[in-house]
Image (cartoon, rainbow, N blue to C red; front, side, top):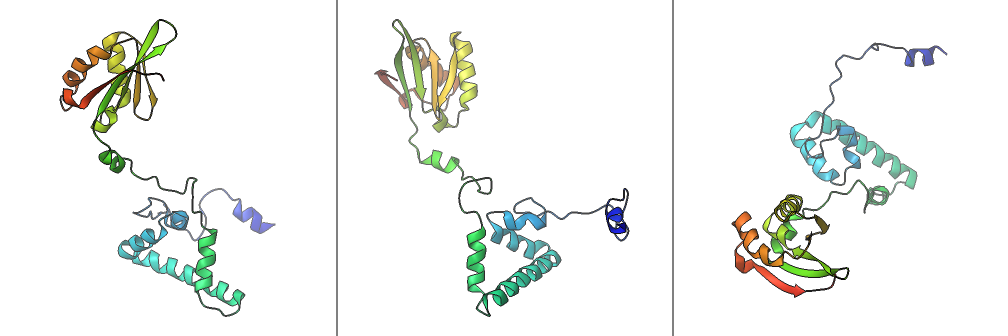
Length: 197
């Protein structure tokens, strides 16, 4: 009963120096005890070994202890099965544990070209569809706001690299886009004509 009361006691605990200093990993930016849940745990280990050797030594002792336990429980086999078991337990796909790949590398591979087309909307109305602005590094949300104020109409981002402007403003875009963004030459803009969406 006294142990529980000691644990629930309010205020500073005996034997702990305050303020409590928490060491963070420079690779995953998490406290060191959470590095093992990060997908790039080996990089975290290398960073710890280089920058915080005392913490790495503690971490290494813990790892050796788990390997020894698994070796004895398996029956004196080598450490390779223990490593395989550890990899089976780790999450390999999806979820919050995965680090997202950079899309900027993929954008550099794409051909820099803007396509403009007109699509029917209802019987008498139409919309103008602009594709390819993001290949030039243009923020699509800012571009939709610009088009909406310039043409006094609705404008929205509908796809990954697609802007839909209400109304038929296809011809005006050939002059307005190079005027607003000088890095885009008129030769980069291609007219696809009328297309169904």
